[in-house]
Amino acid sequence: MAAAVLERWTLVLAYGALLGLTLGVAPACGGDPEEKKASADAGACASGKTSCSGSCVDLATEPKHCGGCGSACPSGEVCSGGKCAGACSPGTTPCAGKCVDLGFHQDHCGACDNACAGGEVCSSGLCGDTCGPGTTACAGKCVNPTTDSSNCGSCGSACPSGKACVQGQCSATCGAGFTPCAGQCVSTQSSSANCGSCGKACAAGQSCVAGKCTTSVTCSSPLVSCNGGCIDVSSDTKNCGACGKACAAGEFCQVGSCKSCPGGMTPCGSFCTNTNIDPGNCGGCGAACGPGGICAAGACTCAPGATKCPGGCVDLGTNPLNCASCGKACAPTQSCTNGVCGCLPSETLCGLLCMNLQTDAANCGTCGKACAPGEACNLGVCGCLPGTTKCGGVCVDLMFDIANCGACGNVCPAGKVCNNGVCS
Image (cartoon, rainbow, N blue to C red; front, side, top):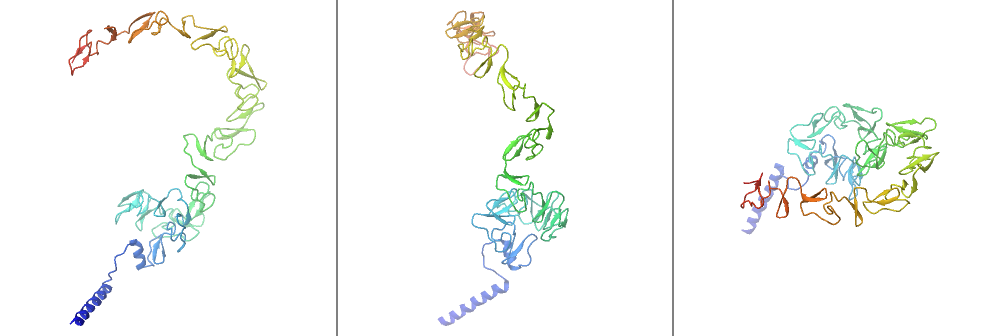
């Protein structure tokens, strides 16, 4: 009996396995649906992808097959432009070890792991039914057929190795100033991914200037980023008109052009000057004579009637910091008249300070006589300011004071305010 039951279950299991194979039922496992499809049909990869070990991959971004099948990047590196690197090139973002363009990537549209739904395309970082202006949907991806070497002129029309897509046609040469790099025409003078030569990418935070990677800085107009700093190329003799364009010896930079100075003049920055008489550039560019100084025959000196003291040329008869002699300072608020420290004619010395007894509320009429809170000193007499009235020894505004509304002592009831002298 037991043997018969075992034989029956064996037949059932065998039939089930045969049925599964006949219907094509596969065990449930994880993985990329696109890679599963490629495994079933290794020769049907979408445009721009290559079959590697039965899977369709993008050799430009896949870290396991970077630049070629089986060429894996070391741990911690990403695949950018078909080359392993420590960081993604400008314009791309690392997502799951791949450097992708968030503006047009189906699985990372606008942000990593933000995949577009079936039937949608990614254009300018947004999933939608159609591609934006100037782009065309090819294999579910928005591309520019005038520059995309994998879809040059039309979807699936890939350019051969060594050629780039120029105006929708595969060409072995690019326009003046451009070089074919990885199927695209780029300027190796400004391309951060191909700085100086194809494939030479600048590090994160750097930009390509004149074919060299430099640290990028944000500059305010009219300054431009140059060699890690902000430069005014309209007046800088070392960067005249463009970063790295230096003027010849004896020239100066004016409005972005190198120019020569006339005879007897010396170039200083963006202008020509006579260093024999210029107090700001006396004897040489940047040699300033200081306050009150003059330049004579290329040497700094003081004007007639002035004396050279630390900090510049001063008049010892009027300078409160150097009254009668260098370094002899008058007391705070005192002035220097004819080399003597003292108060102005309209002021009186109160302690160490010169005060106007006609207007000073702390010294009204005489030193030390202070006005009450809210009062002002007018012609040496304390009183309320115009528009206020003294109530109980305090100056108040009868128009808005709830304790003195309209008249002294008229208190507004709780919950009411004083408006134009009326409680309301």
